[in-house]
Image (tube, rainbow, N blue to C red):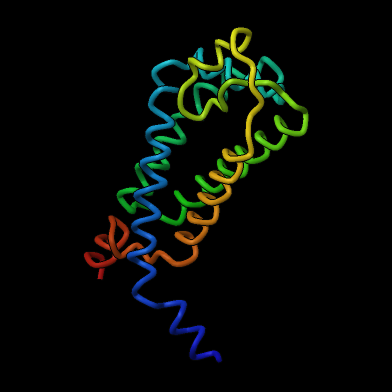
Length: 168
């Protein structure tokens, strides 16, 4: 049994699966970060709609979080500090899941989660809708995918692998 676990844990297929997950989640996070960086005031409005933070903290989060998303996504894609980037992204995904659960449990009416486009959030009074569970499922799937990267991706296809090769 011990031999099976060791072979499974170090199987070369993990690097390929991890690369696909890294690229997918990294692109999703980059696409999510760029509009927030370009329009932080609109993103601040989306954050405020969750009613979880005091208004004095909303602007700070609206400015800092998109940059953390972008930097972690780029690191994940290029495979630089892959496991660290995976931990940061999984931490953000936990935060997003908690926020979505909070919005759903409190029946907060929103037109968008604030993940990608903030324009819809500003139209709250014209268009009321309740955040659905599909966003929650999306974030949970990405959480487990990035967790897989953290556990199994040895960084072979990325800067971590290049660095290991050139250090030895």
